[in-house]
Image (tube, rainbow, N blue to C red):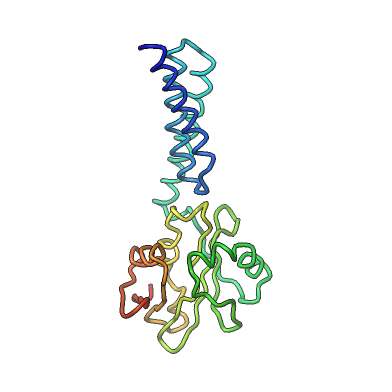
Length: 207
């Protein structure tokens, strides 16, 4: 291979590593970093640099380990934990306040925490990464907020929440209803089993 092509491979590898560090999602960071490290490993072989090969080969193995762990935890339903909290929980209030700008982008219709909200927090390794708020009226629960931080948004926390038994049945809820004015949030709700019933209104059966 010509020196020019070899150098180009090095630049591509560098660009991928830098790109991976710009990802807010842990999963995407690992995937892109893995590809970048693999390309760097190939580059190291082309230029005959054992340190480059060994270092980036090790990074490839580390990324694979964590990606496999993520996939295993998701398959076992252990990646996320759902914990009921009081609506006046200081931790919940702080979480919502800290992520308020991101909340406004994805769920602009959310108008704030209420005393009557049922509240759950989504945890990863004991750390809060999401929150769900709902108001109950008879057999219908209105989901006012279903939010997960960008770092964990593509790990399908909603699947864990909406397949956890007893979250709503103990309150006599049979139907979940919510609204979504942002296309990305509507797509997520569709994946979670919600179907449109009107303008920006979706619903599904309670788990």
